[in-house]
Image (tube, rainbow, N blue to C red; front, top):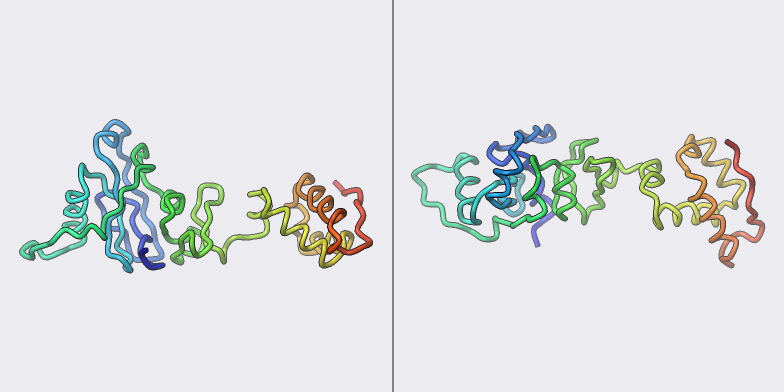
Length: 207
């Protein structure tokens, strides 16, 4: 298992990524050309030099990466399989974006703050962007929907009561981010949960 800093940099198949936090866009590669050669994530475990590289084999991908990361041409470079990971989900892509690294359970820099992140550290893909846990907002959670969003609302209702939770969201400016269906689902959970406040009741929502 590579460390938290392992799979972070690399959006171009043949160009070394710039120093953090800037991230350059990868040059487009035609789908036909990409289909002829598989995609690999290549870099040094624990370092910020990982790249997405198109090559016919792991050995060739490692060689390309070594050459592009300024290894001494006269130095004998021994192939290290720990430095190369096959990523089949990238084969069809015209370019590998930060979100693609997160989707592949690897890491990249958060596109909001520029700090390194990965799935194990709470990174998510939000509207096609790689977003770290610190930058992930309440609005993002509501837009994401699902059980996590409902649980967040249900916990708030359980702690504060339905009316106070609603007023708190309004005063913080977050009420506009809460879809009706999520709020009603959270209220329904609290109405049947003995751990919730006994005075919970379903209120009509304002537009």
